[in-house]
Length: 211
Image (cartoon, rainbow, N blue to C red; front, side, top):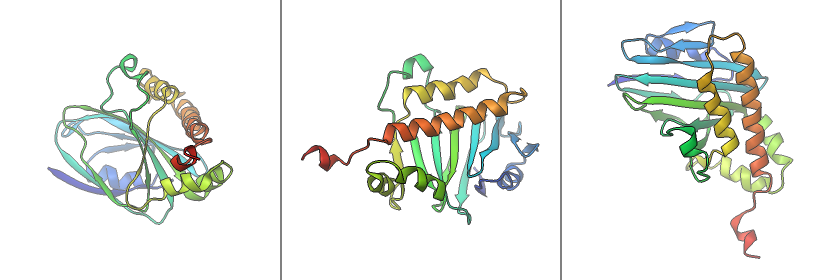
């Protein structure tokens, strides 16, 4: 098994070390093309706005790789929408309990081994920690959600709502080399963040239901 280490950043510079680690081509500081020696497909990274970036992954590995993510000085959250295990959209859209959204703190190291001979299809939002705190602090029960996001013992697991599923699956119909792809990806990023905040706006600790 090949082992590679990398870090994440809100800026595109992190991609160079990652691409070098797997001998991949990096195009325009946005697209990493998976080399034929280990698989097919690509990743696509852009800054959506100051404090918000997105990493879109769509590839299939033919050789096993262990990817170890190191910490970096930047403090941000990683909203990891993993649709790798999903089948057709019609089979999944009515399932409201799929815990396939994982929220991680960039200050925590972790490792990932993508499945071999199985499509990896995912969407990761990187959101500056200070910016996210401002969003959350305007919500009811902000302390409860903050505790969930900042639990150092385990990542925050949530489900992907049906509207967000539709948005992410729509990327299957787009080419990353289309001139409109970047703007389309930015639009989806804002909508996914809004969906998460709206869904959690009325989040209430379980004990309050018992009063």
